[in-house]
Length: 220
Image 1 (cartoon, rainbow, N blue to C red):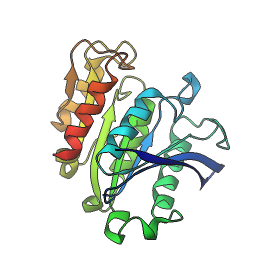
Image 2: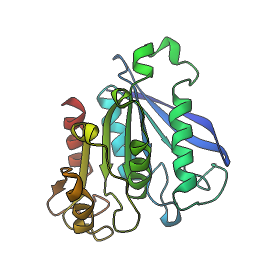
Image 3: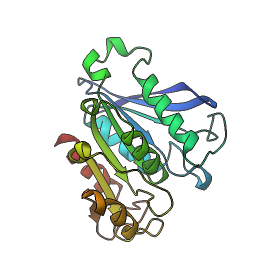
């Protein structure tokens, strides 16, 4: 399935938020997936390979994929805010994604209200807090957290009613975020974690496998 990509600008608390929107072509759109990138101070951007892979998985399964640069990254205004401002950025993108120009002719009203959230590393940490604040669980169809930065940040618990909709993926030999830190976060919640043997933090050489596993979750 091909996709059409457009540059978009959202408005956030620190000013403009730069984004990219990938649209599925030739199939009905199921809703909007908003994808958050890894740590801005360590080179994380919406062009990160894992983020791009997540976007491809969503688009190939009929979702519009929106990825964006946190404040201070690329053309996004502001500066790094240790997750607080970044959560504000994510919530702004989610809100404005419902009313993006051109939606009415492409996406049904019901699909516009359906969301999926995904994040990689620092982006998974920020995404967890957006999920924890979600007030209408029936509109949040899927959650995907990859390389969740539980050793470095206070990752929010996932509400129990969303566990069946949530995929937590982690590499067995992740040298940036040790697997045991993610297990320590997940254990009190009885939240399953899918461990990929022999895979490190950035999924080098295993991006097709990542895409396949996310696609399987989206189809379930």
